[in-house]
Image (cartoon, rainbow, N blue to C red; front, side, top):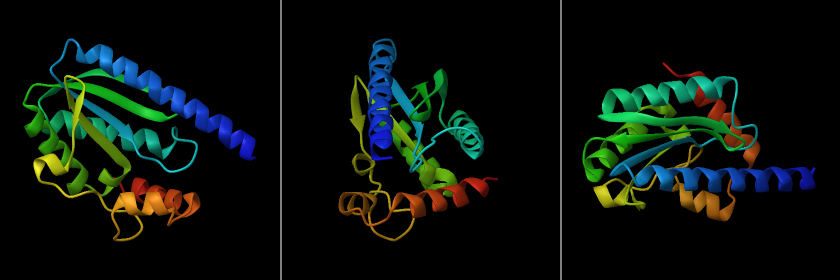
Length: 165
């Protein structure tokens, strides 16, 4: 089982590298880029309820951020999309943080914003670090210290996904 997980982990890292290269290529022709990905603990990272979550996320970006969908794909690392924003990087990041904060399913997504290949953080636009979906600690603390196991994180993520409006 550990060997299987190791192989899956390597394939996910390779898929993320391919995403990165596609994003860099796209960013050469677009000033402000939005990258949407699902933040799903465990495996698999696609199918079933996750497809519905992703569709809602795409619709929310299209409804709240003046942008154009450039790429929509699925790989072993899950669903992802790339948009070109028509507004400033700072305004794009603020709107993306609001999407993540104002929706229960926002904990299941990462909306990253880039300009010329440089990512802007939540803290850069006045938002605090995201909290863990299980406790009140900052996400980075729980990840770094392996506070929760994948099974309990996945269970909570599934609960959030099933409650999408």
